[in-house]
Length: 314
Ligand code: ADP
Ligand code: MG
Image 1 (tube, rainbow, N blue to C red):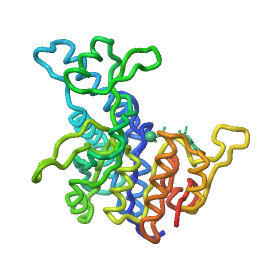
Image 2: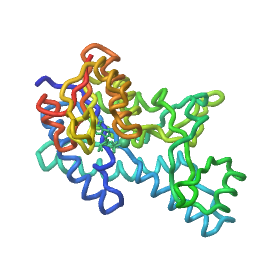
Image 3: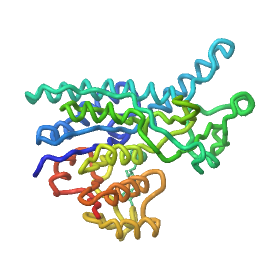
Image 4: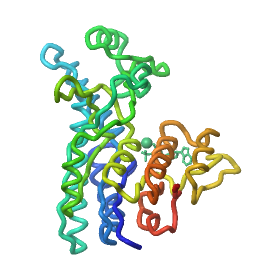
């Protein structure tokens, strides 16, 4: 098929849940991406960071607990930046190595990416995403008091901080990402949905206590790069209707209108498949010819060649 510009969004299962798992998982995850590059496609990679940012924020919380005089809690935006750094570190090295093993010499670079969100986004009135360690009642009360956290009781297991999940508005480093990609480099960007920031006075950016859905951030990245394809790689080969029920039906090809109808029927679970299908619909509607694909990590090449996955188009 023709050479395409592709944004590949890697789901959490491609990264494992801890450091040794990540090293192993990423060794495999880069293979289907290398397949796309080997076929001549121009690839930009984004990825999730749920377990990773959870781990970092828990670690930073334990540090604070160990000596509250010395260590103040680490802002969530900084935790996200750290997760982009160490996930990008593994991804860029493993991909560079995989490409080199195939005789392809290419630079692979991670770009710490900030994503602007709107302080008036309704998500900030209703924080829903639990992150980090379980807290005691005393710790929770103290963080509500001292830092204005929103904390919820989580199913009898303790208290947890919840943050908002606003929609991405703009990608601060988009010109850098574009410049690298246009000159033939593979870029890893908008990891974990990007580091959420507010635009404040003049040109100042301020970290926001939020988590942006990586499916929506990847969609925005694909639009801004004028990509032909948005490929969302996850733990299922296709999206389904009546998912998990006896009359489950895998979906191969969906028009935007069909996809919207299934969204309205509640066919896709919130927080997992729904954001993917919503992102796919947004991308496929954004310009004629743009196609979104949801499939299994290992099937990326078959997917782009039309052999599998759920394909969403105008
Ligand atoms: P990722 O880490 O890749 O973002 P998620 O776990 O968030 O993955 O979302 C993918 C999961 O969504 C699948 O593994 C599947 O269990 C679940 N899912 C929910 N509804 C559906 C559906 N209608 N069709 C297919 N998968 C679904
Ligand atoms: Mg997800």
